[in-house]
Length: 87
Image (cartoon, rainbow, N blue to C red; front, side):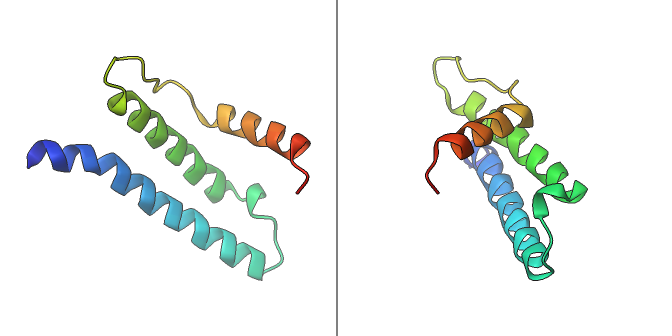
């Protein structure tokens, strides 16, 4: 049970941070602000990126998971997506 709880911890943490990010997005949008510019929002996204790396590292059974990728990799991917996405 301890191993299961430990493994689930990363997922639970990621879900909680994602809920906080969504709440920030809703609040800032209601105020007519751009949430991406918020320092708190950037900090939370960084925390989520770290947890996603930990999940990747732990979940890879062959030891090839990476936990060294930080928020910059996600920001770069978002930038590419914005350039190629019709929406």
